[in-house]
Length: 247
Image (tube, rainbow, N blue to C red):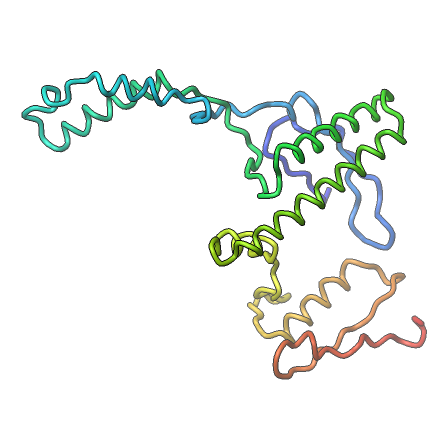
């Protein structure tokens, strides 16, 4: 079996089967099942939940300690260890812990409570529709309402960022830099002999040979000719040449 299924957990997948090639590709399709018991395994990592922390109680506990007597005659290292021990004790009593999520919990700036409620409502409606408890028309209306709410929230956020760009430049450029995260150039490649290719002409030839090897002789094939010039080489590329027998 040339195609593999790689997982980060043991027993996550099962019933791996080969289903033949897709179209003219010489790669085999792999079908497998994701086991729910392994998928639902939760992370055991915990982190401090500062939203439910009792900072008032922590301040009172640290304020009751006679620091003059506790640190009298102590050096810098000993004083730090004493202070650290009292601080950790107060932290253990005043700041609860929560299970750390494996997903990226960073929310976009336009995700407010109203939009978050719409998204959760859409997910609940989807589960109800899959179980046959919600009609398709009702589910479609909920999805459309959620999309409209997300579009309005994004538009309002961008308008507010544009208005406050003089006073809050950091948020403005952070928001739009996240939108522009895309690779415009192709990095260095290795050809068949293992040599590193950095020139645009050579990289184009390597990519052309790679994609041509994926398909069999029955498929449509063409050759892209790239000419060197100033600026971006891809803008100066000639159109693909197609043989008469392939038209």
